[in-house]
Image 1 (cartoon, rainbow, N blue to C red):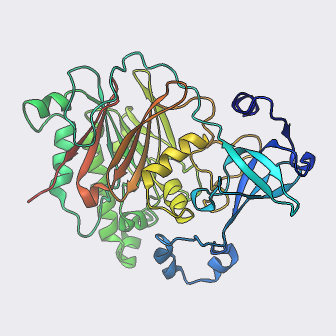
Image 2 (tube, one colour; image 1 turned 120 degrees about the vertical axis):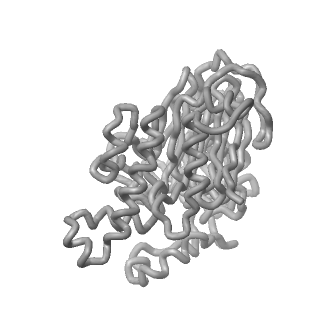
Image 3 (spheres, rainbow, N blue to C red; image 1 turned 90 degrees about the horizontal axis):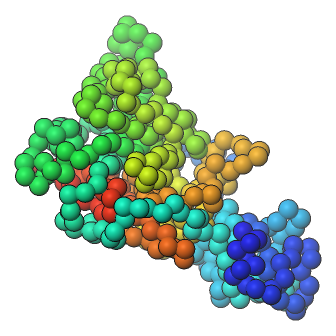
Length: 405
């Protein structure tokens, strides 16, 4: 970060907060903290009825009284000026600011520098920006990675036809012509969180025995869990599958979320090509690097910014070099003493995906050093019956819809 600051503002001295002098222009590197007046208190949340928690999911905690504070290892200072709008930022962002300290003790910001995007390995096969969300394939080269999010297996009002059509398509049992050509080049499927419904998740804790299940009324949810296992087994029997946990899945709530336990999906996890992976998840296919989450990071960011552009929020995490800046402030996470697992300053991925979003959104982001990043917001399959294919050759994106009549 310091090297970038010196390159970004040559000749401007870099100071620690305690070394800032009034009226002298300088640059300061630190971590942003957003003082949000409406942010819920942890203690008051414990006091609330749990039935109210669901109603807070889409709530905005933004007000005109919000302000930004910069912290380093020695002190903190209040930031001011029109260059930094509190409505565009959240806590936990590493940033460098240039400006001068006023007589009132505020630091008047004249310019801002972020750490990203990080350096990116050159994608030798890339030759075009790719098609848009409704675009057509641009050639017969490259492999595809299929992404599906929010399957909600075991849900009470679930339509099984789109699910079966999806499995038949990605395994090559459905379609013809161009559709069959696309499906034949799918080399991996990534299931991006919220795989199981809340009923099936509750059943995960009711595996004590058939007698106990019958007495507790858990027989139906447990059968839903077994049906979900059989459904996912169809995928695993045909190709590599990465299974990411999500907010509604039976795993820990703290980020990074740990993989599904194999006892929950015994049939699927017998296959060696099944990856029970964490959330966030990073992997590579043919030299193309992918990084994604099941949506908790973006859902939380949207509560503390004054806009509704989720794609812009995802792009911001690339610029900030941090996938989950609000952890552990407002997103629960494991304590890490020596490193932050959500920092992406070493390598910028070629594809960034976020699951369980309200609708499908995508775009290409260009960095100052020639970085090309495909950004994808994945919708819930249970609500939209949509999966997404990403071409590893040109990063083009192709949505596939499976709506039943």
